[in-house]
Every structure is written in structure tokens, then in C-alpha cells.
Image 1 (cartoon, protein in one colour):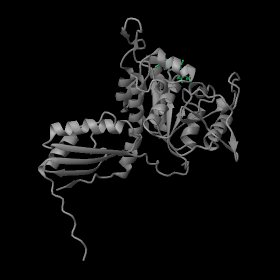
Image 2 (cartoon, protein in one colour; image 1 turned 90 degrees about the vertical axis):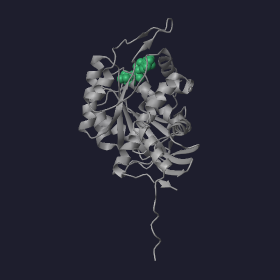
Image 3 (cartoon, helix red, strand yellow; image 1 turned 135 degrees about the vertical axis):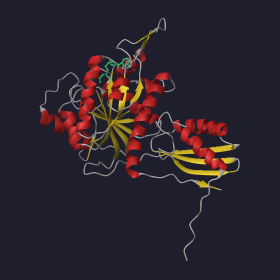
Image 4 (cartoon, rainbow, N blue to C red; image 1 turned 60 degrees about the vertical axis):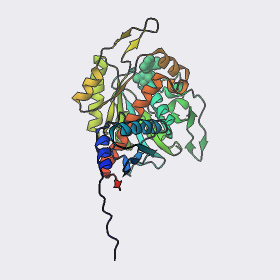
Length: 366
Ligand SMILES: Nc1ncnc2c1ncn2[C@@H]1O[C@H](COP(=O)(O)OP(=O)(O)OP(=O)(O)O)[C@@H](O)[C@H]1O
């Protein structure tokens, strides 16, 4: 005879906890933790609440922060006198396709419509921010006409080849491959479409990436051959679009957004770079390139503003010196801003795959 099914009877505290959790909009995930599928266990005894959360993005620092905030919130908003929240995380691989690369769980493209808006700088700092949360991160410099990752990550050696595979160079913990390692920095690259396509696919496929949660792909500006190669030959989980709030940059960013829509690459969100400038002498804040443009663009295109970054000399000098700000000042406010944006993008990658899986949280009550 089979065991009778366990009958789960909600009690007052579990009802209070579920209601409170339903009201808590996580600033990184963008929705409540139950809807996100993050609550994997909820145990409610008369005055004691035990909650297990599992996040699908790296959260070495975010996890403890979330635990502390949630414990305080639940103590204030339920009858519980003891609340224990346990947070774990792991990054699951993207669904298997013909293009899946076994060593890489997710490819995230960092793109911009227009050149010079700070896409490469943003890509580098986002990669470092994900690594700071515990993820294994790589960087593929797909800006073949103007590779900047060697300089930004402070790398200049020639990569080794082992059994015909290029070994990525590691800068600030990021496994990196760039055409800039293989050609002279001073020499212009004057390849036509098919050569570019071949060079990019070889850089991706012939590099021996080691067990990556995320490979960040630093795209060239615009919408050209490299973008088509990315869409057709690479398993991209999503793209983020970097823009400044300037009208001309936004116009080009819209084209980029539409291009990703056309080739079925989900846009994870928009990043507004050089949003404001705070004068280092007098502290006066100015919107040099205009205000609110990326937010409006996100609303118009049913996308999301992942965050804003100021125009700051420390970001510029770090990028030029091979000491990106997230690595050189990991506790500073700029690293925090990059960290939030990086986690929001990673959380969108996770939520996308959860929508496909439709998982339901387990709730156990006394
Ligand atoms: N938020 C910022 N504050 C100050 N300087 C910045 C910021 N973002 C980028 N920069 C600087 O702006 C310049 C252009 O940045 P970057 O090379 O990242 O742009 P890009 O969009 O990748 O350009 P390209 O399209 O030419 O590859 C660099 O000198 C960089 O250091």
C-alpha cells in the first residue's frame, strides 16, 4: 500500500510569511522571491520561520546581504520571533542547442549602437563584478576592428597554444581572448565579412575556455557582420545595450535593440553610461549628455534600464591603465553600481530559463 500524501496545512505564520514575501520586490531580481522561484523551502512554526532561498546567479556577497535584509523585514512584518533565511546560489547552463559549448554556460553580449559610448569599459567592469560575486567569467573581445580588452585588463603577452587550442590569458581573474593578443596593436585590421566571421568563430571555438559560468562578449559598435555571426553561430543567452543619454547615441541604440529582436537574441536591458558628471572640485552634478533618455527608451521598447553609471575620471583612468575600477576599488560606489547592473543582467538570464521550466516553490508548514 502506498504512503498517504502529506497534507500541508498552512498556519497563521506561514500565511503571514507568504504575504510578506509577496510584497518584497527584490531590487536585483525585479520581482518577489516566490514569483522568481527562489523560495525552495518555507517552514513556519508558531513563532519561528525558516526559509531556504536558491538564486540562479552568483551571490557570494549579495546572498548574505539579502539574508540580513529579509530576516529584518520578516521579523518586522510577521509574528515570528525567530527568522532564519538561508541563501544558496548556482548558475545552471543554458538549454542545450547544436551550438552549445560545453565549457560555457552563458554567453552575454555587450553591445552599443554607436562607438565611444563606453561599451568595452562597461563590459570589462561587468565581467569583474560577476567574478567578484563568485562566478567564473571569461571575456571574448569580438571588437575585431578595435580590440580594447588587452589594454583594459592589462594583458599583452602572446597566448600559448596547447594541442592546437589557444589558452586564454587571465587578467584580474578573467579568462580573456582577443585578436589584439595575436596582431600588432598599431596594425589596422582590414578584413572583409567572411574573414571576420571566420576569425570570430575561431577565437570562440579554438580557445580552451575553462568551465565558465558567463562568457562576456565585447561587441563592436553598430550592427554588422560580427553581429550576424554572433546571432547565427553562437549560443547567446542575451544582450545588454550600452548607451549614453545623448539623442544620437539613443537613436543608434534603438537600432541595436531592434536588430537583437530580429535575430531572436533576448535583450536583458539597457545601461546608461555617462549619465551624470559630478564636478570633482565643487560637487555640482550635471547631465552633460541629457537626462532620462535610456529610461524612456527602455519603456518604449518594453525593456528595462539595468542601471546608470556616471562620467567619472576614475572609470576612464582605470580602463586606460589596465586597472578597471571594479578591481582597483571593489568597495567603492562605482564598483557597487557596476555590481548591481551585472547582477540584474545575470538575474534576467536566470529568470528567462525559469520561465521555460515553470518551477513551483515547495512550502512546508507545521
Ligand atoms: N563612465 C565613464 N566615465 C569616464 N570615462 C568613461 C566612462 N565610460 C567609458 N569611458 C571612457 O570613454 C572612452 C571610450 O570608452 P570605450 O572604449 O569603453 O567605448 P566603446 O563604446 O567600447 O568604444 P568603441 O566603440 O570605440 O569600441 C574610454 O577612454 C573610456 O575610458
